[in-house]
Length: 170
Image (cartoon, rainbow, N blue to C red; front, top):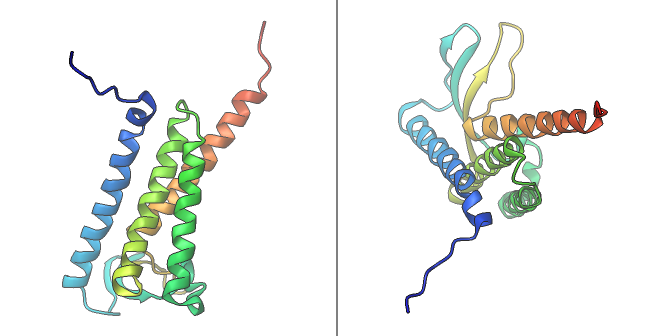
């Protein structure tokens, strides 16, 4: 008699999302490596009139918030956020593919920044949108993954509410 390992359909259904998380973290860390090794510190390198590369370090969270919490406090906050998003993702029905993709992007971005914070004590930021009279906060690819993931989750939820609100035409 031979024994077979039966894979749970639930575990198998998470494989694409785990791959997306791993890809997001890998891409984020690779780009940060390129930035760290090839871009001067705090010197603007214009790519186009409204977009520049500008390597700097963020000791806080988004927009340097909570920098006074210290490394340990920020690591705990980031770990809590990742755990909470994973909890929400686990409760998301399999048919909500866009929501799961959004959660995977959020987790991938959060883990990329968490890796920086644990390894270096700060997050490496390098993307600067600007005009001659205004500039947006400097951010990185992990931040973009988090923002895009959040937008995807919200949009999918709004579309889902709209679908549920439509009366059936029986």
